Amino acid sequence: MASKVYIEILEQLRRLIEEDGLVAGDKIPSERELSERLNVGRSSVREALRALELLGIIETRRGEGTYIKEFGEHQLVSLLGTFILQGEKAKADLIETKLLIEKICLQLACQRCNESELAALKQMIEQKKIDYETFFKWVTNAGQNYLLMRIWLALNDFFKLEKTAVDMPHLFYENMFAALESRNETALFMLFEEHVVKQLSKR
Image (cartoon, rainbow, N blue to C red; front, side, top):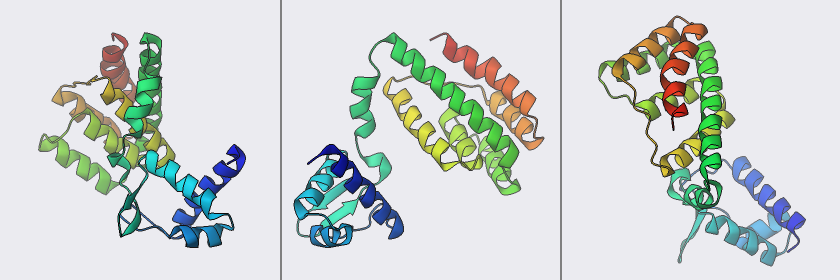
């Protein structure tokens, strides 16, 4: 199949899934129905579906049909990581990019987080159910930018492949919360630079 046609079919499939409101666990239309709706040959649809299955985005259950998989279930990140994280420069680029994204997300969270989100963060900190990953999942969610959230999640998965952990004292989260609650971006960035950037720049 010509690559242009192939990419177009994948894009059409993505739009169809979105338009139908399908989410992880939902069954997608049959090959025949997709062929009719997309107005392309069944062999082309079959090839596009095979590619999505190899990436772990969908799964075929014998006798049942084809279903959308949970994002976290597939091994795409591990597969890509094998190729992307080659050499020290690539690892340094990963850390630098992750830090830049986190700084943007912090700024957005500071501007956009609401009272209920702040209350949820405060509770996690008080109950000591907080670590760096949990904190930044909260940050990316509070920032209300879905694309940045997905980018951060992917970068974080690559980061974990490298078995690199960010270990922060509990006081860090308490101080970050205080800065977020008072909408103090300057204090937020100072804490981030002092604790996170300094720690990761040594690696």
